Image (cartoon, rainbow, N blue to C red; front, side, top):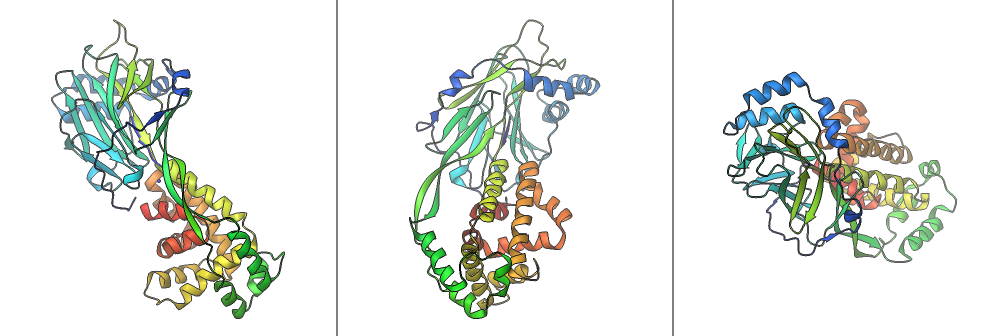
Length: 414
């Protein structure tokens, strides 16, 4: 199984302690129940028959390396050495990850013993039931692949699931499951944004364009920076933090098997349709992702930033530029100012370039997870690097001023 979480340099203490007593399962889960084969066929179509046969011949449940080799043939996945992945933690067979404790998602094979780390991959199992579990960190989340040796439990796999308190799990028609949870965010009090825009218009006039900002005087910039910040309040927003991807299963002959997920209290059950003709071992996968959600949230923030009235934009830029100019060149804000100047020849061009580069990075995060930063640097050049540095060093000041706080969280975690 692969889990992908909403896009990791933040230290993450992922101790699996929360219960599922407060979890709500969407009613649509029951409506969408039924064995599916689409994902299994997609996996079966990509498996090389010769490589699979060789891996099956070499397979020995007591040999952890051979279990990993079999999984690599069936479900090749770009893997991150698990001890080098700050977003993913392995603890007593649990594999869990996320941006922080509040958005952590964890999974393990029920009854699995302690995990052995082999070449950066965690292998655990239940010898009595003839099941091995291979867990690995991936660029977008984590993957758990179960290898079933015999028919004892072939039709049903149980995985213990750990998600934030009050999380909601919704099953989609393709069999995948979205995980949403309450996240606290700061929002302006009613009327505050309008008040700031009105005060800005008194200083720079109404109906200004982005290019007009380049002709503002130092006195106007300072006056804009002196406008009091918006008063805010903390609200709780329900956001998707991860996706458990659609289930799949194939047998030792590479035949696609029908399978589905069923949520049962604290367990995620993967049901697999087998027959007397099913060849063992059977390989089945639950995976989850979280980077996609974070990248998508950042991209939405950039789109919202582009719709700001320029009075609002001018206040945001002014507050940042005045702060950065006053900062020591060796400080974080001083380094942010140096990066800001590299984005263009004027403040309006810098603002436009910043939005362009961060939107590009968010798109890469959706596709490539925590590998996105390296890809962005390779294609975006000096301005791309400057935009990331500006957001990293400017931190919350930049994220809050431009309404892209989630982009700062994303970049800070890369």
